[in-house]
Length: 160
Image (cartoon, rainbow, N blue to C red; front, side, top):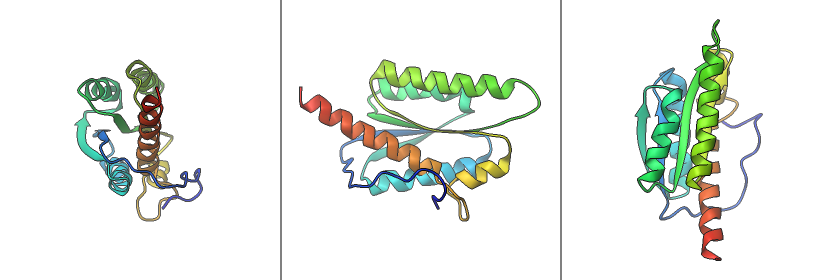
């Protein structure tokens, strides 16, 4: 599935004991469902405990991510789809989601895997959703990044 994108880091990751929240928007369900399936593959592969939370759209991802981390999640995987249209809405929502998720991660000191696709058209999303024939698997990649970072942070905190 993952093809032309950046290669996934190699090496075994043991995420046993990690509690991960996968938070996904509800727009563009074929693409979003592919992203969720990719995240699920990664989290199962790494033996993380996880749950899926759905939010109306990408704009709502940061507040849900903050709430999940405040409630004890060790990491969040944020998944969404924003497709460019003919108005500035795309820029506003993309910026709000990106800036918000970055702020949540820094304020919480916990990782947020960024799986928000900002696209010019639906075909680009299909290519990145980890579906059969997709060139990339951004859901898997976002979960992989969140888990690897959570494991790293756990190790760094243990050496204090």
